Amino acid sequence: MAGNSRFAVSVHILAYLTYRRDVAVPSAEIAASVDTNPVVIRRLLGALLKARLVTAQKGASGGFALAKAPEKISLRDIYRAVDPTPDYGMRHFAPNDECPVGARISAILAGAFAKAQLAMEAELARTTIAEVHGQLHAVCTGKR
Amino acid sequence: MAGNSRFAVSVHILAYLTYRRDVAVPSAEIAASVDTNPVVIRRLLGALLKARLVTAQKGASGGFALAKAPEKISLRDIYRAVDPTPDYGMRHFAPNDECPVGARISAILAGAFAKAQLAMEAELARTTIAEVHGQLHAVCTGKR
DNA sequence: ATTTTTGTAACCATTACGGTTACATACTAA
DNA sequence: TTAGTATGTAACCGTAATGGTTACAAAAAT
Image (tube, rainbow over all chains, first blue to last red; front, side):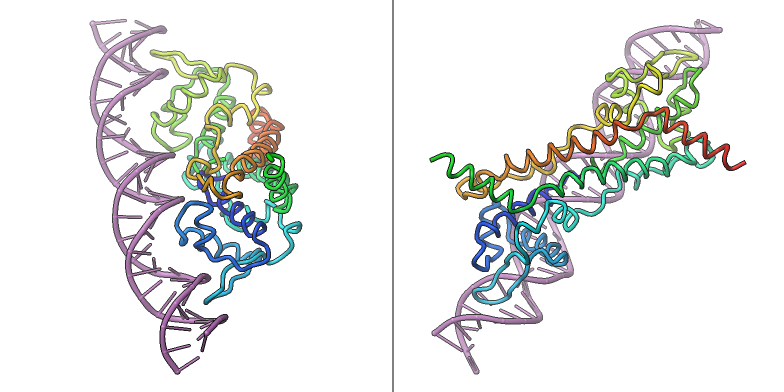
């Protein structure tokens, strides 16, 4: 995964939309929960929109809502929607082609990275936003 | 994983040391194979040294060598030696504690991230530097 | 002694990221 | 139909991380 907060914030966004499931939620309200700027939220919602995880409604009493049941949205769905496929530093990795090692290591590394990436995504796929929301609720009621 | 090339270059380094198993290899030679500056290589070798994956020898005819058999060095060993534990953007993620979602989402996310991270590392553990070197050799001989 | 090489510190340029302002567009509600 | 609200996006800024580079002290071999 990357060093940015896109995935973390996106999970927060969808958990919040689950929490406020019945209404259209404007980006300003989500931003207050995440404690950041509404534009940051809308940028991420743009990616989630393209992935059909949320719907948007412009204008007064508009806002965002889940596009499907929270049981059908996995953390992998969110990850793929907002985080570009990592290049594992291969961008800045152009070894010497004249060296027997340098000439072939890139392809071998790419294969190893791809497998590691799939393993990580498979683990993310095991958790849904509904479960994340359930854990939220469990903590809240458990405290009383 | 991160957006840097530390892991990729480090695997290259250890594959190169396996390829030149019998001699002490100076950082300049490795740098020529990776096509970068020797200091970049020595920085990474410093981390690999601390993790006891390589040994160093100063002075004339000095250089670096594997500290153990390449069959006993996994990609996970290398990953853990050179890449700091990723924070998955949690550094820049401080949601509003007064919101029921914001107050608890961090802990839940941390748990999900940890599981995904372990899954990825487990996959990396399945490959050794000896295998990476073997793939190099297979390609070279296969081409003839 | 001279040469070679590690080990580190310091600095630079580039890039990526989050945050912010601004504003056009679109929709609701009255 | 008009006033108000919210999305969608472009542009810009400051900060932080990264790789590359120069410089140089310490250590070891020949």
